Length: 399
Image (tube, one colour):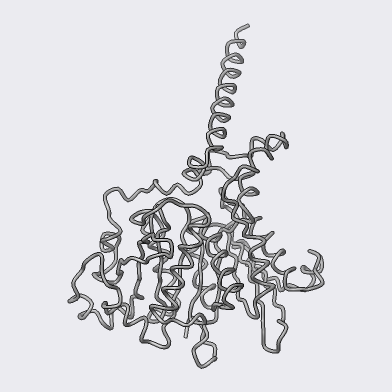
């Protein structure tokens, strides 16, 4: 009799939790609420810091130049151009003497001239994940890590999507793709950086944006980049919601897995589906050359590393017109064990023309989660990525 109240309390606690959960997912049927939960664009932790003042995030004066990029549908995107530290040191006096202001005509800045006028400069375009701004959390460390491969050559361009930070508008899948295309157009047109000197990087939600942008340029314009790096990628949003938890705590559709009819009902009503898997397959099939790297940590508790595993096999299969089984891919791929640190799989296939190569690299590391994984992977990844000079020869990131 003494334990009866305990069971009763547990019963009502579970009932209350279940009720709150169904209220939560029912609210997600509203498109506006759904997108607020997906993009979390109104959530950030930089309450006492302003991305318009990069020095507040540990950068030197004018090492980062904030500026705006306009989209074809009239939105204004807030962007950062991050100078590599060694290049900054060579021009420190001139950079310090420049006025610090926002908004700024980026073309008038020394940082822009150092990027656009150096035929060996390379540009990494970074698409960040959901929530926050370009200056959120570990993102600033990511930019520093990216440029460490060739510290006087690799510039970073990163942007806040519409509705994020100081950017105007509200996020949608189509809108974010438009934003990504606008950023790349700025690099190709305004900065005059050739695509073989550009690497596209995406992290978490940014992997979906990066993939859609790369598909746009590959299919509609025949443009191929030096490399594409996807960190903590997912196959598509409906599939991800079956295992994803907000902040690793609040589950989305995983509690409905035992109830397929109810689960499918909610999955079909996801507004922005972000079909990365099919888009990557499309890119690989229609590209002459592609250098794709998939990075994932096994201890990523929000987006399982198995998503990157599925993408690796799917994209490797897309390199063959006849199609390949998992067993066939396993029999040919190059596997490198890193011991307790993880492993690397590499798939290389010839294109239709002599000299064309399609290279897929998968790095699964033991730790790093969704955010710090970048800090441990960048040295190896950047060395592996090949940047092509305008003369057509290959330069490693460490050269």
